[in-house]
Image 1 (cartoon, rainbow, N blue to C red):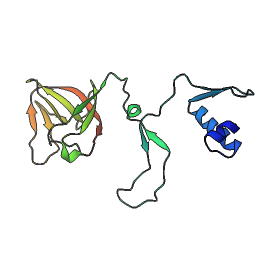
Image 2: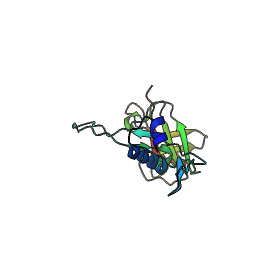
Image 3: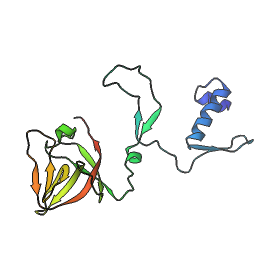
Length: 172
């Protein structure tokens, strides 16, 4: 303990113990109880995944700023092993009133049956794909943009490739 304390400029042996416990908890080291010099590196060090969640920010009424000690792993939100998830890059501005802009990435769950009004990736008989709101009507399907300057697309048949489950935006 003294050697570790000296090497890392930690004055208290208790401080060294606290650091070792933290490293052990993170899976970076293993220690054997009741044996001196029984510290070994873990075979596979676990690296933190995701981005640090620094806290929550008010977008309306002001709130006290409280720092968080969590991480946001988009791989946990959207399981990277799920074969039914895919990501598409958005091109165009037909969905801007639903806060989906050109250059955003949309996460789509493939093969899901949409509810009326859900945002879907639809494939028309002409093999054209689009991201729109899904409205089946009596004898046609209305693919509704979320841009008041654009008109809906009406088709007799369309196949739903998948339903929107997330949007990721990187501000340039």
